[in-house]
Amino acid sequence: MTREGDVVLVYVENKPAFFARIEAITPDVKPLWFRVKMLILQIPFVVVTWILREEYINGAEFTMGGTPIRMERVEAPPEPLEDLEEEEDVDGVKGGDEGRGGKVVSLAELRKQKKKKG
Image 1 (cartoon, rainbow, N blue to C red):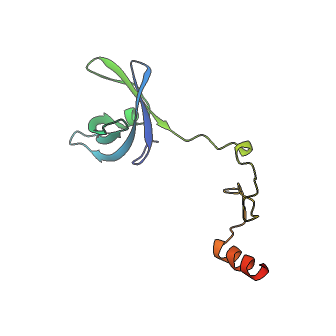
Image 2: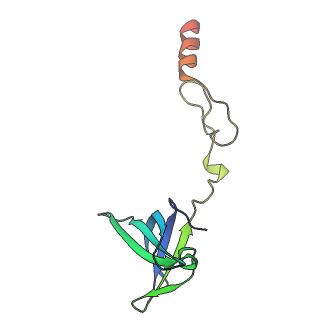
Image 3: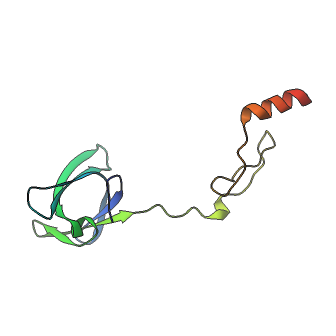
């Protein structure tokens, strides 16, 4: 289900055309229709509001002026573990443990320990 804050890929004539972020989804005066405010991610930014049914917001094809349009919610692909190689940095602390239950190390504590040693 597509919601506010989601990024969608908009297809025009079955070809990827642009990305947009859903800014707001509010009921329209027509029952079962919604006003979908989108920030089109291009330069310069463009804000549009389309009036759509729920099934169109969630990926069903519709037409605008006879042109087939479809919106598909985009999800970031999972980060592969091999890209998170552990490398030892200058302070002797291993990196790359984000999101894998790694230990959080205070930089202030590391500095204190270095001063005591040196």
